[in-house]
Amino acid sequence: MENQRYSQEKIDMFWNMFLNETGRSETTEYLDIFHFEVTEKWANELLRLVLIGQKKATASSLWRYEIEGEDIPKVGDLSIVTDWEGVPRCVIETTEITVILFSDITYDICKREGEDDTLESWRAGHIRYFKEEGNEIGYTFSDDMPVVFEDFEVVYQV
Image (cartoon, rainbow, N blue to C red; front, side, top):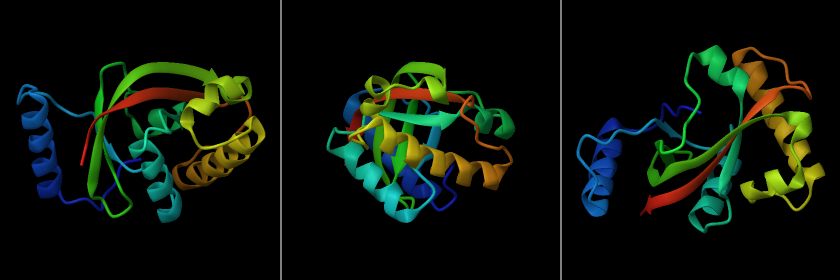
């Protein structure tokens, strides 16, 4: 989810540090700047799980991308993840994309998100999230909703 709280100056400084410290070309671009979730508590908790290496994937509604006119991530894309306040904390690189119906997601798939101990708890949390997001941007959650399941790795963190 695009975060409007961040300072472009802070983002630019962070991105330049990333490029310099990893030896990447100055023409390297990022796909997105975002925080996880729609609440401060969960945005910061999911970021914590990413930073300790427990969360290695995320699930998004394909409908959100369509409504907002955005391309879905692809393998090799880089994104900046911020905390709730918009402070850049890490860069992730997409390693795999799977588009799958919500009802077809298994525990073997969702456990890569590192958030839940059971499929049932994962489903409950994501149904809540997708209903909130859908109310915000204009879609209605359903069990046959296509989900963009994105695996990623942290390639830089401060």
